[in-house]
Length: 333
Image 1 (cartoon, helix red, strand yellow):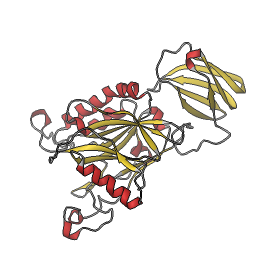
Image 2 (image 1 turned 30 degrees about the horizontal axis):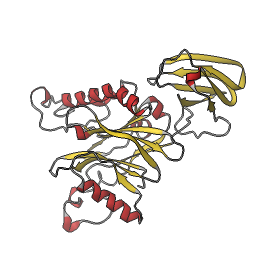
Image 3 (image 1 turned 180 degrees about the vertical axis):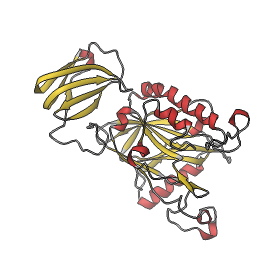
Image 4 (image 1 turned 45 degrees about the vertical axis):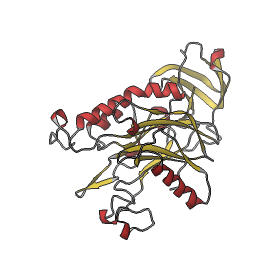
């Protein structure tokens, strides 16, 4: 897979399991470039947690590891990373929602296709939504990627709660007919990649790697006598791969930023203005992180330089959408 960041669910609590994963990656690469984010727990038990493993030559963790909510906190975690290449930042919120089994009372199976504990999963989704602004404030960036085993298919209530909050379901956008899990012959996505508005503009692809869901469970790693040292059936879920182009974006995840539509930004917004430089700038919009247009400036005729007033903006995070011709570039402010 050769990922810069691995966001892993259901890793054994404590440090032994995650250290074993890191050791395996480093041994396979013949290097010591992989490390993990220490969540601070040291107990050994049958309980599991979510972990981040990252390539130290590509990204640097920014600030401290965070937990989200109070329900099984180590299954709802967040960490920001800075890309060493250009210092662009992203926040990853990694979640493992309650399974579809063992619900009682209002969490009992309602026989509507969503299984047991749907109310609990909805609660976890709402808690996550309510924490997003705190993550943006703490990590000082609006680019959030929500990953993990949410134990809900794309049209179920917990996922609708997330997408109704102006978040983008990346698998629905890039791989809508695919799947990550097979149960009794039925296939779908329980594992997700969901992005904030600003983050979604920097995603180039999202798709499952079919190494697990299609394989017989008897080929799994727990059957040691039949184990083969390849990636197949290392889990019952397929991993989701999300590829990013952090930095300037074009409003189209499939389009690269070229010299023609590249926008440069100069100045400090606290000085009351910014200078934008690009080819044929004909409109500039300032948006909130939720996508609401706050300011629109039309340029006639188009110019190579544009002075953007910022003294009317309250302190916070914004997106700047710069149009040149029929396309636009989105930048973070």
